[in-house]
Figure 1 (cartoon, chains in turn blue, yellow):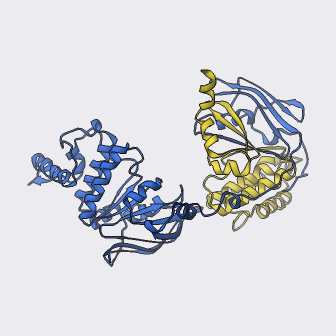
Figure 2 (tube, each protein chain N blue to C red):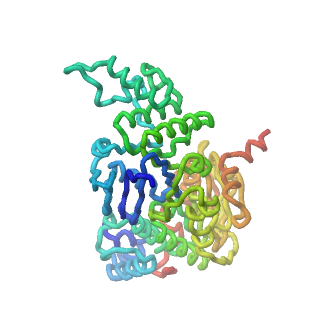
Length: 337
Length: 156
C-alpha cells in the first residue's frame, strides 16, 4: 500500500457569488502522479491554490504525512514542500537559469552572493532531473518547454515533496511532452507526489495512476485510471448532458421584429444584415475580440456607427443614446415576466 | 445605490410623471422583480454592491425588463453566476420569448449558445461569418466559423 503524503479533507471555499469549492477531499501518495480533471471553472485551480497557500480555505483540514498543517501563505507552502507550477510561467526573462532557480535566496558566502556556488547548485539540480540546459543561459532565450523545466527545477530546489503541475503540456510539442514525462518519472522515483491538471485525457492515461474529478466545485470521485473507460470519465466530468443543463422549450417564433442593416463602424464592425423575430433567441458566438459586443453596442447606441439602418416592427428607428427600449413613451404598464 | 433604485433606474420617467418619483409604485415594482427573478437580498434598501455577483446580474436584468421590452440584447448574461442562477436566467429568457420578446444573446460559452438559441450568428473580425440553426449544429462547426475558415475559403 502506497504511503500517503498529502491529504485535504472537506475543503470549502467561496468567493462573492460563487461557491468555488464545496466539501472537496483529495489526497496524494508518495511517488504518485494524481490526475485532477474537470471542466473550466470546476474548481481545479482554486483547489490547487488552496493547497499551495495562495488562497485560504473557508473550511477543511490539510494534512501532510498525517500531521495537520495550516498553509496560510505561499511561503508557508514552500516551507512545507508544496509547490505549484502555474500555467503562466513565473520566470524573470532577463536573468540566467541559475538566477531564476535561486531567485530571492541565493547561496551566500558570508554577506556575499556566491555566483559560482549558485551555478554549481543549479547544475546539480538540473542534472538530477536529467535536464540539459546551461545554467548561464538567459531565460528569455529558452524555449517554452525549457522554461517549464527551469520552473520545475526551481520548485525542486525548495525541497518539494508535492508538486502541482497546472496544464504543463498546453504549450508543448509531442517531443517536449515526452521529455517532461521523463522528468516527472524521475521525480516519482524520488518519492515526490505530483498533482497533474490537464484537459488531455490521453496524457492522463500515460502518466497518472489515480484521477480525481471535480465538477462545479464539488468532489465527484477518485478512481484508478485503469478501471475507467473514457466514457465513464467524460460522464463524470460533464455530469449532465447538455439537455438537462438548459430548460427545454418549445418556442413559437413570430415575424421579424427588428432588423439592422449595413452596420459599419470603422474597420471593427461590418455587418450587412441582422434580423430577429418575435419570441426568438438569436445567439451570437465568436471568439473574444471578434467584434460580437461591438456590433450590439452600435445597435444599442453605445458606440456611434458610421452607418446603420434599423427597423423596428417595419418602421425605421434611430438611436442616439442608450435609452431604455428606444420605445415610445408609455405609462406604468409593464409586461411583467 | 440600493436594490430598489437600481431596478427602477431605467424608467424613472414613468415612475415620476410630474417630476416627483412615486416611491410606492417604485417599491411595488422593485418588489415584483425581486420576487420574479428570485433575487436574494435582505431588503430593497440593501446596497446592490453588497449582493453576490449573480444577484447583481439579476438586478441589471430587472432594470431593463421594467420597460415594455420588444428586443432585449444581452452580452454574456451568465458570466460569473453559479449554475443554479444560470438556470433561472435561462428560464427567464424562455418566459420572455413566450411573450414575443426578441432576444439577442452574446455568449462565449458554446454550450450555452447551443442550448438556448434558435439561430446562431458567428462573428469573425467584425463580420458575420455564418448563420447556423442551433438544433442542427455543433461546437466544432461554430468554432470553425469563429476562426474565420469559411471566409478564407471563399477568398481563394
